[in-house]
Length: 280
Image 1 (cartoon, rainbow, N blue to C red):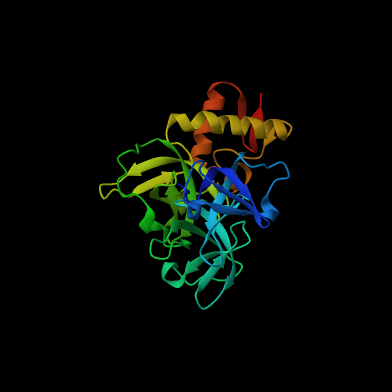
Image 2 (image 1 turned 120 degrees about the vertical axis):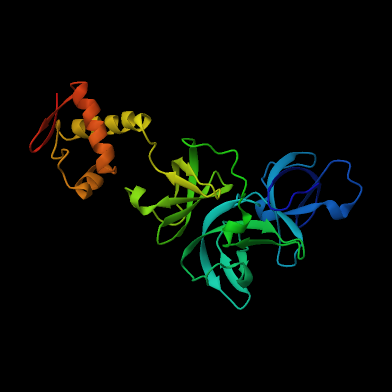
């Protein structure tokens, strides 16, 4: 069965003047076949060959194949730019000739041309069309029982708030990354590794960009060593430095920095001076 909105491996069944019709071998219903237009047909394709294609619907809502790979698949989240806004909604560039529609009812806030938004793409059962929604929270799983404190996870920032950034955890759950835990520039649509910091009683999940406790010290200690080597063995930072100066130089909090240089000092890899730290 052809799966709209995803990659499909299909067989070239017959060639016509407009392209190849693809489908499942042995299918007796021509309506199950899908056209791969000539502009996407590889020169080497022959009847009987298998080919991987993406299936979507054309302007007349008919399934159509392409060898192009879009920036988002069905039932996935991704950041996409708005190319135009019309009376039916906003249209996004997702890497195909036909832009992806976000109906007004699926916009968490009115979309603006030229801006990027994190959206979820799904197949509208009423129309049979692929559409996107920026109301991403309603597509996230409320059951976070698979998550544990300290887990390393993938984060996708989708919305800035007064507290920090709402993020999507592992393309499945909602989380919150607090401003106080952000030590480098972040924008909506950024993907980054993170860690589960706390799972609250209300099942809301707090995340961090750095692992807490001793496990976080070793990689940050190595980061400091790398910076020392890149700066002729000296950094004008110590445990009395301004937190902002530490953040700008190393992208870590002052608390993390102090723990890391403490480890390096005990291992006799650095000397802590009044004007900074020196590589031994």
